[in-house]
Length: 373
Ligand code: UD1
Ligand code: UDP
Image (tube, rainbow, N blue to C red; front, side, top):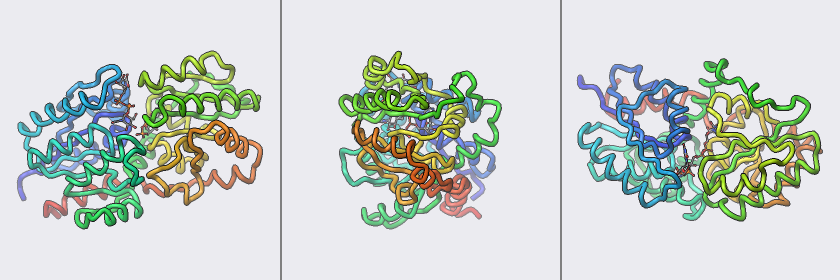
């Protein structure tokens, strides 16, 4: 094949950008590919900060984010606007990532245009359509129209097999580990967190929460647990980069603003966020990406959900599910703060989600798929 393989990488939110930009860079370096980057901008400022960090300039930017957007409008806009780009560019393959509205609607749009589809971070499942909502169904949609599926782990491969998908499945590891290693190595200057003025005498507990299932009462429970924890322990400081989604802000700010040793901050750029994860004593989160990154940094993670599609680190022992239940959160944080043996058991550093070379494995699989050595 003399012609270059035209690949369109399509993404729109912060976590997708973190996990796709290393792949954009990798494929752009290979003259066998003609790389087109298309961002939906489902997220705006959080997406832009990642594009800037990785120095990626999209060829197409649909600029779709609206304040407090809803699934119906966003989905239909993505379907309609990606169609225009796909029909103009006619890529040989589009790559989408994970389980967002950008991923599911771009994949469906490419399927309607009869363009081949590859799914990065394929095969994650809880097998419960409501958890996480709507991401579980987004993953099912993307995998059901994909020609190539890049699975982070054996479990993800098995999930696709039991779903009846038999071909196009490859285990590659998760590109988030490529992103993490790249950022820790190459962005030391940008990883400075002095501006946070963290108290060096206090243990940092990092908190993030943004999942739709946690909106309302569950998020209130998480905030109440934070208040109780700083009351109970005078040697901890909780640092919470608050997601800009109004459903998060409107609960968190009234409950936690002004509470001593609870530091509410804007979302951090990825490099300082990695530095903050590394410095943290414990991480409390409902984020998917953070569950995958933290095992590399040796920081125990308590997941603010009742289930996870990322069970590998739980089996490995560095991550534990505590749900969004106030008492359970307090009890498990207390266990880690009070019991060194329990803490040491959870702070091993090794990562079941990848070896940092997922992008190169994916590159090779795509070349093989198109019959190029
Ligand atoms: C989305 C994804 C979720 C992913 C999360 C990562 C879906 C259905 N949800 O949820 O799977 O875990 O991103 O963070 O695809 N906003 C800003 N600036 C930004 C980003 C968001 O102001 O840069 C605000 C806007 O008001 C926006 C709202 O947050 O309307 C919600 O954004 P949206 O992407 O719809 O939902 P997330 O909760 O971010
Ligand atoms: N992250 C970041 N800044 C923050 C919070 C998170 O850069 O203030 C990174 C984090 O390291 C991870 C990704 O964003 O790579 C996770 O995004 P998020 O939690 O929004 O989404 P999810 O992974 O749950 O889909």
